[in-house]
Amino acid sequence: MTSRRSLFFVGFALVALILAGGVSYFADSDPDGLDHSTLQGCTVGENEQLSGTCIAQGAKEHALKDSPLADYSVGGDDALTGLAGVIGVIATLVVAGGFFWLLRKRSTKDT
Image (cartoon, rainbow, N blue to C red; front, side):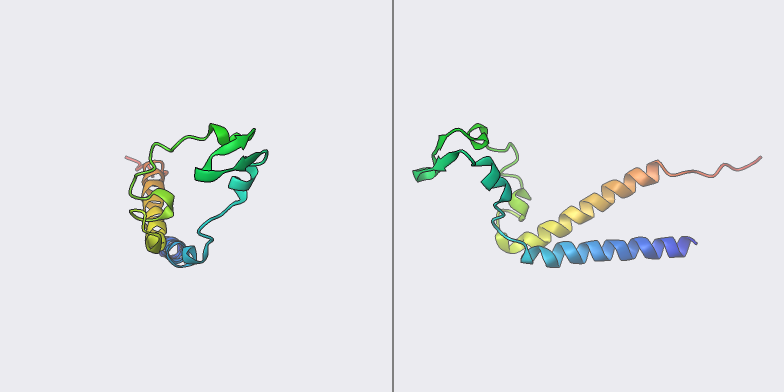
């Protein structure tokens, strides 16, 4: 049973890595659903100045905007979107795997 479980997790990891590394290049580089909904009630002028009343007027720069994986890319290079996805999947698998390993059910040996 352990080998089937291991095979499942390896297969799961491979599919996640392939999806993150390959399919991410087909994603829209400028998704606008959230932007559109937060800009309702405002007009955008020159230099992206907002006039009117909308949620976006309270927006501030994110504290991690200059981090290595900001904007779903590596170092701001849009050509490395897939690499950012692969790094994210690996980091998630390592953290989740660590938690599951720490919280796993341990067998007790009878003495």
